[in-house]
Image 1 (cartoon, rainbow, N blue to C red):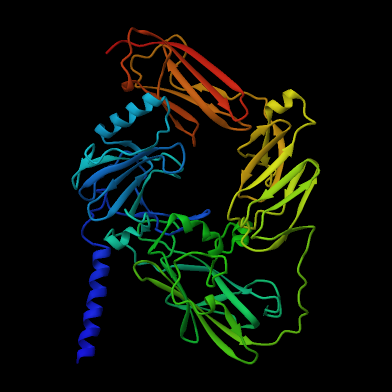
Image 2 (cartoon, rainbow, N blue to C red):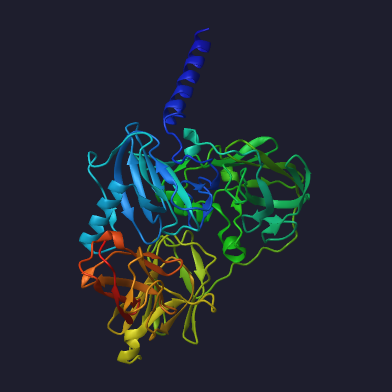
Length: 565
């Protein structure tokens, strides 16, 4: 009896703690429209997990955002990329809520931010940390309006909940944020992996695409496979919610072998520091080759993610000759809608000769600093840039430095240096390093210059070369002309573009005074709002200076006339 009492007391304590950890009724939804997700928490993104939920805004901008609970504005940041216009609220219950891609802030906050922008004469503010008493908020107070700023793919609200002390991000659905969902995940691809030199799948040492068929009610069964040695699996899977066609992420992935769990992970919470290990959770080579993400149900040694539970041999299956295995992979969304695939495996010895490892002249010892030179190119890899020891390809052909291939993920940036002593001074002024892995679309990489050399740091392997940019950016006025009366205009709008190295910076003035122009980099549009400053007189000189990444500069000037209101 005493044992039973202790058991139930412990169970009740754990249950109560979970409820306190994620209070379901503390935060109200930040928008007063039906909640439909365009993106789910923990979704697989490029080099990171999605750190919040993306709430659809009916394809519109300017929908009011309300504080979900009492608190204060603890941080504000305006960026050209990333979160764009973002605001952070700190709440007394130990959590911080985050709102990104805003069009603008609530009036008092907007005025405060613009004052800082004008003081710094910069659109991007960096982090602003107002004192707690500066902007206190009560539940339901207006804090801003939804938008499409930063690296947004369209109008929506990115919403996060973080543990204030640890900065860990937590799935907002654990706090009661609800989106209708009665659809099960869709399993699209199954891959089997030989994980050791002597492992085989259907008498092959290569990873193998396995066919499967539906057996009803979101259940599938694969073809029977023969295997030997240590093997693993991976699936391509996505989830859809009600009211949207977006392909969202799943919540949990589980694998059982003969009824026993050997692998499990879910996206309840994670830290920003570990998000990069997504490249070890997925089949990175497959993703870079086919643009399809396959989640592995086995953990590799270098993976430091803390998402995993109940791992047995890290999800790797050791297949014995003559034995049979019933493998079941189970994918669930947050609402426990479930899809599963069963994989019959038979242990059959392979007669295939062991595969010899590929070698080159360039061996990477992951724990050491590695530096290689070839003709006028140097590559230098800090310690632990690679996750494993390996051999890489490195060559210089027709001026293109071929540095292995981009299907291998890196943990850190490496340095790529080109000697430029053979260039004349004019060429040195206009040279930059470009990634030309896709030869049709060369991409500028941040290039720094020293005497007789240029260098960049990057986490991407592939093909790089030197290119030259001698073309100035272009500037086109959108809603006004030189010497035009524009009394009815609420804004000045211009389009800027650079087809070579890309736009680096811009500066606009009216009558010699700096003015704030918001830059929509996705459309190349600069916009000045006349409500920012009261103009004196009716005749005004507008000037815009735009520079690209190698220093080519274009100047645009125009006179306009505007009545004083």
